[in-house]
Figure 1 (cartoon, rainbow, N blue to C red):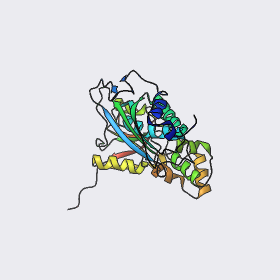
Figure 2: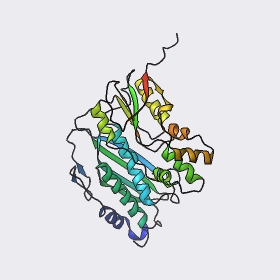
Figure 3: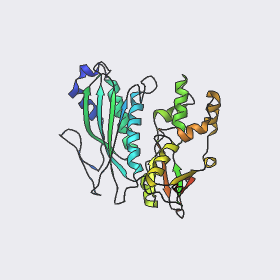
Figure 4: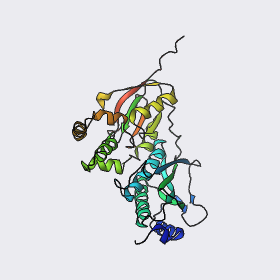
Length: 299
């Protein structure tokens, strides 16, 4: 596609973006009207929203528009899964400069669409306006399918803490990019396009998870949110957490303990949850700690 966003015009850009979209059975009315209509069989809708700002959350010299689209959708869809819900739909609000090549928002939409397909959702609408800085805002919706939402506040002493998905890969990839390199590619790609285990959220709800969250701020920080909300302590067994050999090699090269990335690196969007101790967890879940009672208040 030739030309800029300004030359294409708002409605021309919207036509280009919506023409690339796919749908799902949950979408009763897609883009093109005043609002979309999405089925909610459970009669409850799980919703989450996030904003990505160029220069703060992504850089165009590090990530393609397609990468940014995948990442923007993933971080919101992961929030839906972390509630134990199944993602159904996404809304996009996009701010773009008039001089931006028109191919950029089109490729962004391709990335959002493809990530939605991985999660089983669809883009159902949004808005596009001109502005000085590229801003991508995603709102994701989900369906609980007759389960109760799994919040951060349900962890009980005696529960086990388990995680599924990648830990530290995005942070290691960011360290590589920050030093001007583009390999090892697997870690750079993990930073550009996280791969949340969407299926794990609803599956954990079915297994009886007592609390759950996705790892967006770092494992320790996000488990801290669970501990605070549940009024418990969490004992983490760092020896139970694997550090890939290649991540160790990156750490040695840049002078960073790779365990730091695993424990504090965000944006991998792994799923971490607490379960009753008698629950038999599938192999994809790794038990990494336990929930214990908080210390008594000093008198």
